[in-house]
Amino acid sequence: MASNGISGEFYVAAQLTKQGMIATITGKNTKDIDILAVNPNNGKTCLIQVKEKTTANKSPEWKMSGKVNQNQIKLNVWYVFVDLSNFDCYIISAEELFPKLQKRQEDYNKGYKKNGEKRKPDPCFYFNMNCDCFDENGNKKVNNWQDLPLF
Image (cartoon, rainbow, N blue to C red; front, side, top):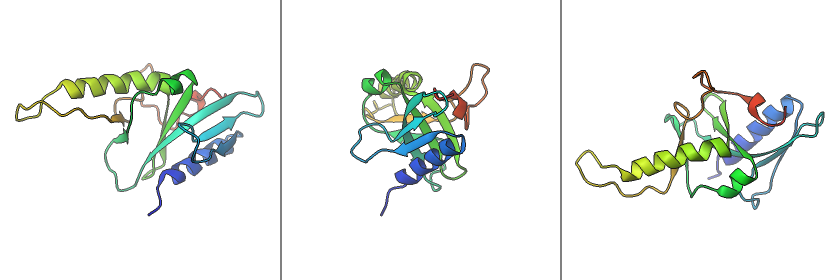
């Protein structure tokens, strides 16, 4: 069965192209970067990692495996979380994203189950559209393409 990952990448590339950007999907052996985007008017570039969830996933969360990738923060990678059920996109930089996810993961791993047992550590991160992507006024940032450092 094919992964939905590529459909999210094509959707993000199409959205960027609609806005006049040049967007190319990287090869599958390119670690941590799915799309290279360039604004041909000002020469600004952006590295993008796409995460999508399927139409069957009704949860407000996207599961991400692995540890905090300091290299993505250093490279100024941006994440686009695509909800394929309604094509909403949540856009956030790795620099802003990872401290939030790391704190939530640490808090979860310190906690206890309802029955009082200590939780087993969960190595995964969970981006949650209901608490991870808001502007300074508390408004949910959705389809916030202008936040990308291309404009």
